[in-house]
Amino acid sequence: MATSCSFLVLAALLALVPWQAIASDPSPLQDFCVVDKKSPVFVNGFVCKNPKDVNADDFFKEANLDKPRVTNKVGSNVTLINVMQIAGLNTLGISLARIDYAPLGQNPPHTHPRATEILTVLEGTLYVGFVTSNPENNFLSKVLNKGDVFVFPVGLIHFQFNPNPHKPAVAIAALSSQNPGAITIANAVFGSKPPISDDVLAKAFQVEKKTIDWLQAQFWENNHY
Image (cartoon, rainbow, N blue to C red):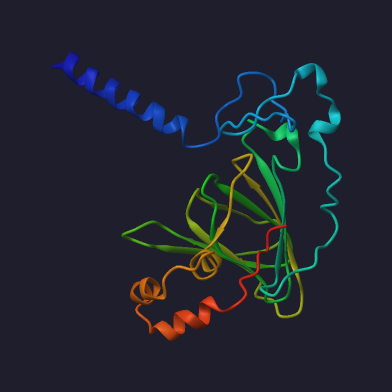
């Protein structure tokens, strides 16, 4: 009986191994794997260039993240530093973003399909939150002040809002992927190309089709730069 139980425990642990392996970016098998931008080969990630051709600039970007950014009509600007900006991030499983918020601005509800996010408030105050998956859909929220830190688990819908009508706010976020991706909910649902059928959305949101048509006619601006 003990041997049988031990086998079941071992089998359960082994079953978790592939799940853990695909839960985040793959671990590097060498010191680094700088993107070879000239390679015609398509892989999950990017092909490495010859380590002999790597230099310090492959790990550097003059990003000016200390400078304020102009915000859009929802009142935010996300400046993402990922593998597309720094080739040396390939396979390292991390990226960074500066987020600027206008007074009463927000980084609207969105998800990162490939990354957990940890956010630190540098200036101002932010009201933040995320919603857990079905069927509970629990809403967890917090007001953050300068120096506070909050975590958004991978794949969950979350947002940040600056409640101050007079002062901007600034945050820095680290994400657990070289290319975390972002899906802004309103943009994806109402601004897709081609548009989702208004019959489908009217049924899903339990509203009249003219409401959906009005929403789809709006300009859904991207706040990631």
